[in-house]
Structures are given as C-alpha cells and as structure tokens.
Amino acid sequence: MGIDDSDGSSPDPESLDDSTQTDLSTESSASEGASDTATDEDSESPSQSIEDMLLEFDEQDGLIRDRSLLDPNYVVEEDRIVGRDEQLQEVTKMLRVALGDNRPPNLFLYGPSGTGKSLITKAVCKNISRICDSRDIQFGTVEVNCQDLDTLGVAVYELAQQAADEAGVDVEVPKHGVATKEKWDELYRIINENFDSVVFVLDELDMLVGRRDKQDPAFSRLLYQLSRAGASDDLTAYISVVAISNDTKMMEAVGSRALSSFTPEDVHFDDYDANQLQSILRRRQDAFHDGVVREEVIPLAAAFAAQTHGDARKAIDLMRVAGELAEREGDQEIREKHVRMAQDKVEKNRVLEVVRGISTQKKLCLYATASVAAQTDGGTARSTTGYQVYQYLTESIDADQYHQETYVNKMKELTTYSLVDFERRSHGPSSGMFLEFQFGERPETILETLREDSRIEMVSTDEVKSVVKAQVRNEA
Image 1 (cartoon, helix red, strand yellow):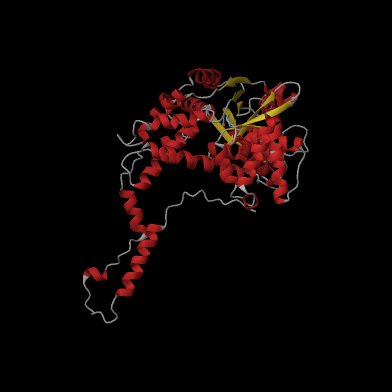
Image 2 (cartoon, rainbow, N blue to C red):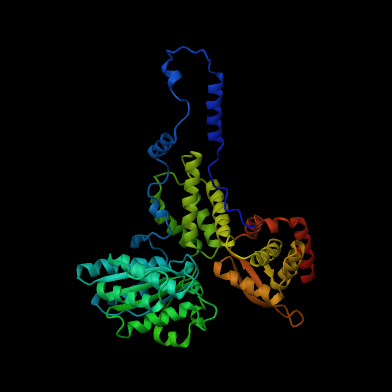
C-alpha cells in the first residue's frame, strides 16, 4: 500500500519513441543487397546520441541566467532582503557583540514558514564572520535543520559534524555505538580548539521531539545542554543559540530547567503580504535573462504565495518552476500559463512529500477532513463533520476506526507539516465546542494526491461527496 512517488514531471518520452521508430523504420527499409560503397548520408546515424542532446541543451541560452537566485535557501545580498527591516535590525543588534569577542544572547525566532527567519540569521552571521576574519577572531556558524533528526544523540552528532566542517577538521567519534555524552564531549572539543565564538542555528527545532518515554522533548534537552555548557567550563568559546520554529507555542513545551538557562530574546516574523512578495520576486528577477518575464508573471506568483501564509519560499519556487517549464516547452518568455502550471506542480509535489511518509490512519483523517473542506464555501471543515466522514472511510476499506478524540489528535499532529491549521469554535450552547480546520493548500490537491494510495483509491469519490453533503446539511 505505497504511494506512487511520481509527480508526473518526467520528460515526455514521445519524442524518444518517435526517433526510435525512425531508426527501426530506416533499418527495415534498407536493402539487403545494398552496395558496399555507401554514400555519406547512408553511413550517418539518423538518431541523436545522449551526449549530443546534452551538449545541445548546454549550448542553449535558456531563460534562466542565475539559478542560485531561485534557490530559497541561498543567502542573498542585503539589498535583496525585503520587508524585514525591523527583524533584520533586531537580530543584527543582538548578535553583533560577537564582533567584540563577547557572548551574544540566545534568540528565539518564530513565525510561519518562508517568512525570512533562516535567511536573516544566515545573512547576519555571514557578515559577522567576514568582519571577524579581519579582526583575527575565530567565529563560526553551526547550522542544522532538525526536521530529519529523530533523537538527541543524532542531533548532537550532527552539530559536531557541522562544527567540524566549519573548522575543516574531522569528527573523532562514530555516529553510532557510543553514548550521547561522548558526542557532547566531542562537540565541545571541536568548538574549544577551533573557535573563539560560535552561533548555533537550530532550524525547525520543534520537529526534534525524540523518544516518547522522556519527560521533556529532545529539543528541550538540547537547549538545556547547550545553554548550560555556555555558562560553565565545558565550553571556553562564547556561544549563542538561535532557535528557529514555525510553532509560536514551542517555548511552552520547553522544560523549566531549560527555559531558565536558555532565556532567549524573542523575534517575531509575520506573514509577507502580496506587495512584499512582489518586491522579493522583483529583487530576484535578474535570475532570468532580460525581457523573458512577462509583466503579469510576478504579480500572479506573489498572489498564489500570499494565499498560503505569505510564504516567500513558495513564491521563489513558483518562479523557478515556471521558468523551467517555459524552457522545456521551448518558449521565449515566461507567461501566466507557466505560473499556473507551476502552481499545480509545486502544490502537488509538496503534498506528495508530506503524505508519502504518514500512516494510513493519518491519511484517512486527512482525506475525510479535506473532503469536507472541498465542499464548503470557506474551504474549512468542522472536526465533528470530518469525523463522520472518517467513520465512513474506515468502514469502506475495513480499517481500524479510532474514537473522535484520537481523530482530532491525528489532525492536530498534521499541523506540524503546515498542511492544515485549526481554531476552536462554538455556535452557541446547544452545539458545543469543536475544532475548525483550514488548509494551507487547496483541499482538491490533497485529495488528488491521497488517492494515489491504493486503499483510498478503492473508495468511490461520488459516495464520499454524498456522505459529505449529508453531513454538511446536518450542520446547518
């Protein structure tokens, strides 16, 4: 019961089939009694080799001039950073004490995905590093993304590896088979021997949950150990920890010991609006050759990204994919149609990436809730209605059926992927409290992607729609 990993973006093989057919046709029509003295045209192969095709593409000018500007993680120049003057100033002022060989404060940067948290941190640290080099101060930035780190031990080793890479040395303990304390000791050794000052950047820190049998989540224990080491003799270098999270309530889950030693300065990042997104894209428009981006392209890409929490990463991705689609079609300009095609592709790719790894039960919960949202005016779904549809789905495929509380908890867990969000609602004393789910992507895209699961595909879409309509009528 796997999900098809294909997103439909592979090159169309028809052109290869045509050339292959031409080869076969040419061979079959050749006379067996042909003269030994063949002409030059007869001796040349009519098909184009892979190398020739690659070199031909390499020689084309294309539409994209500088692909790095279309990478959301690329650290751009300061004049390309838009709409974040206040946050840029705050982070710079607090980290700049590293220039005087002093310990900067710890920071907690929070706000929706794609709002500039990582970009600004990297930009400030890059400038600090450049100035420190001129002052003979050994400054380092040790950055990890915690999304794919499942335990504290793995996270500590990754920090040691990144610190070693920054210093140009080797990690002298194995990744597996040693106690976490040995990994901590190795991290401290690398820092103390190679740096005067270090900023640890822990991106998407809330995703580092760790083992469920521990009282505090792994991110809380990581913050405690790093901040305590910075105040003790374990580290002789000055260190600062920048915790970055999309979850505004992450600090509520941090244990009291960690909170008392971490004590960060908070910096909030709000959504970009459509005008700010347009400015961001215009500052990167020189990623393309002159005159290839039609006037309507940037406003449309910004509008699409503004619909999903003002995510600058999505806006930049849309421009990149639109440019690539136009190149593949051999167009000389990037047009509105390419942005709309890119929107469909980016949405589906993102949803596919998320749902590929979630359990069948979460898929059923998500499918039921998205089915309701797809048929409501506001694109939202009540938890009570979603659960009724979930019950129908589990009965249809003979799957285990959870209680409503568990269904709600599964949906809450999906908020960490930024696919769905929720608010508590009440329509009077008689209706009681319920959760109302809103989707970051179009519910139709989520439904289409989930139906690539063979078990969900067994369920009739028409029957699901009928069940949803009946339940929505009962809401009124």
